[in-house]
Image (cartoon, rainbow, N blue to C red; front, side):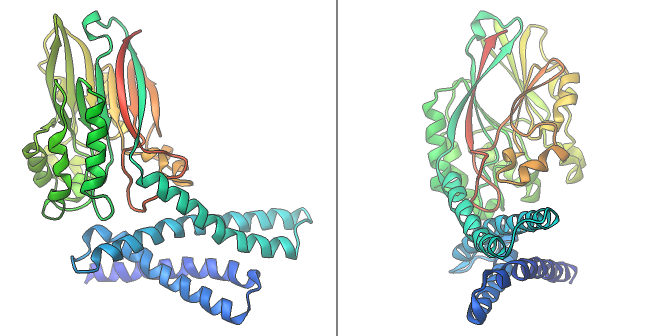
Length: 378
């Protein structure tokens, strides 16, 4: 009952937001009664589709569920840009009014431009999201790096979000590109899925093809905990990846030793107290001759604890680089970094923009990536 009530409340909120867009844009377009009626109908359909998009990973499987999920998620992406641009237009109109500028022509033309611009951003964002992620090469300088570890490479993929619109062919193309890089190790830094093992196991199967001499590793993200973390941990292990849960492995090149450690998601304890994220535990018991300590941690905000635990490099994701405007502006409210290579005391932190996308198939100003991290002497 509570779930149904919250669903109705969300639909009411979406209806009000769509009504705001309609009131602010439709009359200003000067499109007549027929145009107003058509616009109102389209906005009502959008409100329903966006509501569907928000629950797309849990839709009951029917003959048309996949197409309905696609429609809902595309509507989410379009509505997001439409709403933001409507607000920005209103701000512009207010500023122009206070300045004694603007006028009826600008009011009309800007109202027409808003949905057209939202459509263009959504189309470009769709193309960006659906293409295979580009390879981003990053060199990380490590002080005292032994010669045997010069050029040691880790291919990082993150935030793929296999689910309603990301399926087996999409992941298969990512795996092929990662293997072509011939890295020493592969890191999957969380948020692999949006949905249950029962629904998505056939679509995550390509992970079994990941191949690197020092192994492929996985750490949980927050979305694994929304989707049944214990079941996904077992499934990822079945696919041949080493799941690092506050633990580490040692890899050697000649007489040089390197640690690859992993922690559970920063918020894991909220779902399972036994999964509390702990960089110190992940590093415990390491041999004295370890020259480089690398931590896989889904969220960048694990970095201060990782620095305290003595790690040299942390590989993270979670932020998607903001995925598309304006959500990139809100990431710093929760995370210390949005994307790229940054520093926390003696610790390097690389934050991936993600290899897939969450929710709407849309990326604008935040391209997806497969990251090839190479260790170089400082």
